[in-house]
Image (cartoon, one colour):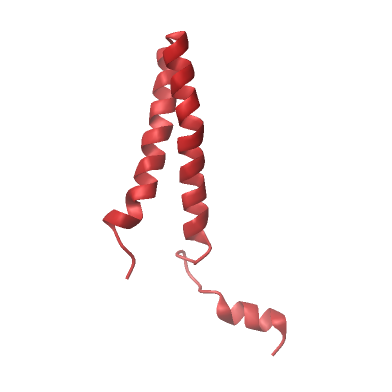
Length: 74
């Protein structure tokens, strides 16, 4: 069996691959990491738009991070 064949066999198929979970967590952490300074910038400048955008990013990232806790995988 060649290395390409062994890679194809070892990878799970479907929408829930083993590689997708860490990518989602990295994206959620990035949303929280970007949302926090954006919200702080909005609070400092008294800009409702920046504060709301930062809050939305932080909440969405936190919900994505907590998804595995609420809906555990089999």
